[in-house]
Image (cartoon, rainbow, N blue to C red; front, side, top):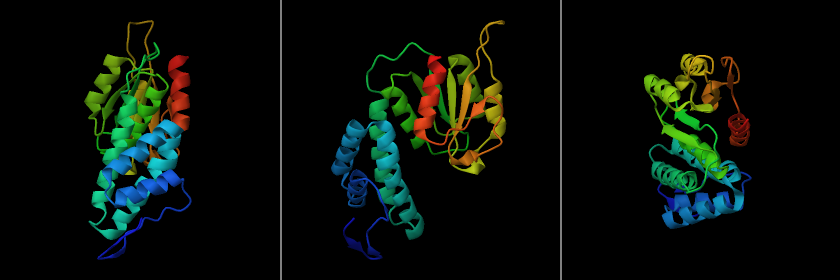
Length: 227
């Protein structure tokens, strides 16, 4: 991204990325909202949600996050602007009018102390793209509210997001995985997906899965709710 400020060149270290991602980073650094929106819209239309998220949105978001972390308050405005537009692009797909398949919905929620939810919005958009119903609760869902929603909705699967180990509540995951509903003799139970880097790679309760990518998670959710 061209241009210079008081602390030197306004560039983002991108590495080997798609041209759309590099253009997105340049537009974000310029705070060029119309161009950011255009690139995101065209990436989603051309690549689909999974590729647009993993190959365009995430690398640009990570680059702005690294720059923010190394530059103090500088670049906060770039990260905020880019995050808002990414969320807007994802939600546009998630709420696009479509006839969803007649299967149990997927419940999406972040852990009680987890404020990050963009990855959940990517999952919602991916579900919408596959015509699978979902219910989005978003960031920082209290335990009681989450468990109540599970019993009220009777989802086919529950996706729980944790960005950091400090927000990964294994006890709550176990309670969700153990939750049942419905009349005696025909009780339902949801598959729980503990997603995000906060969970680590081991120690998940029985009855839970830990997919590492959006594509893997969406494939597993589709198989689960349509079985």
